[in-house]
Image 1 (cartoon, helix red, strand yellow):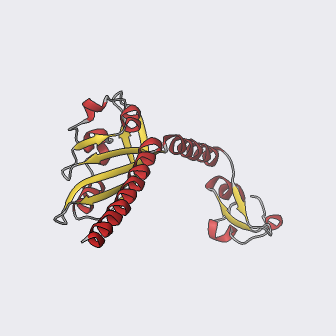
Image 2 (cartoon, rainbow, N blue to C red):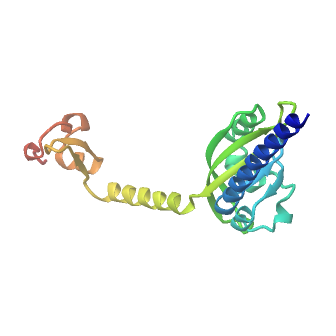
Image 3 (cartoon, one colour):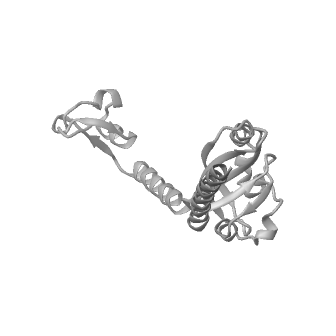
Length: 195
């Protein structure tokens, strides 16, 4: 009898230690990441302060709000959005870059991982969202793309391999030299005849 009690105490100590480790891990994630918990119908159950501050809402305003209401309408009304939530309800984790709108209407981009959490009966009981704000990098990429498009519209642009052979060229260059892209590709730069 005393042996069984000792074994139970050891098992309890091990379980308690594992629980504390899991709680410490969860607290670390809550501190450094954007975290929200959703019901399976997409209603917010809870959110950490990082999420509420980023979205511009008080935590009490967010509770009970539909996830779709926090997303850009063109995304929330699309089939990709519906597929994400269908996957989650089936217990499949997924990741996505999602355009959100803050309370003030500002665009916000989150790289998000959604993880379904199953209850004791094996059914999905809630969805955990862990995200990071990538708005600055998305906006920088869009600015770079706009700059490249402006350069392509206004200048002759040629891409060469390491040996000086043409890999690609824009329409402005092709018009100046009178080549098609197929004819220009592979030609050494010094052999290009203009006009």
